[in-house]
Image (cartoon, rainbow, N blue to C red):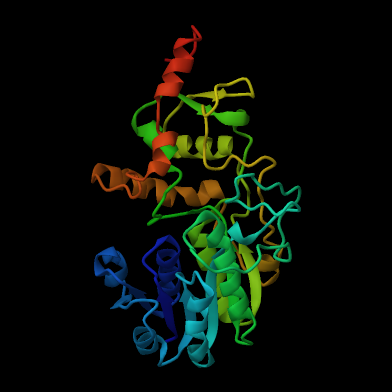
Length: 344
């Protein structure tokens, strides 16, 4: 039985990868700091959870020391993190480091976490320019992408078969910050209308965790040093995302497609890049990767999970200030009240 080790694997990507490999007959081991975050269903399916701190050298050696057919690092954020792996890679047949499209910069040097939004007029290739490798605070807006680039370089320059996977706007069961909640919440509250800034035409390429999992399985079969984008085979804009969610949950609402004259902030959503930000996945497809499905085909997994989590009072991330703005109905009510005849 082939052995896979997923470092920090209790999140949205780690879970999807674990399920994919277990169903393919792999022995899967998942590390993390908190056993309570390990889904019971994964344990029952045969996955083994190991309490281990990713940045503890002894713990890392204990987990990876025996070698593995596949090593997936879901929590490699800095060059120091990457260099901790290097002594263990000779015993690993194939490795994948989960990175992010946040590393890419446009012609002006802007990235998705910049004050000024980036502008990409064509699908982003793996060869597109990235941020300059950096250090400092990896959990800051400027530091996140720069640290990821530094980690990527350390692994790719090692000569070992490490594939860097750059995903975008990941969705799936176990998401720590499920962006789609802003629309799911409106459905559960039976809101009669959905307000979308810029007519809902803004887009930021979505990535189903199950699609990334399929790519990781392919990487395991084709070891090698490379960079691959991971995104859904389609690239829905915000209007299409909202429609897919409403349709799956059986809700109908009026679409209020706002233009530049709308009050500032009304209809804001997390996918509002114009022109839409799209990743090219040609390199992944050329490797033989087959997507599980489109956004509309894969998003139900997260939607059903969110509905169940809401019923249990356990939707993750809802206490984060991130959601306060997106689930503030007051501006919508004010806009509706100022225009007689609109949906109430």
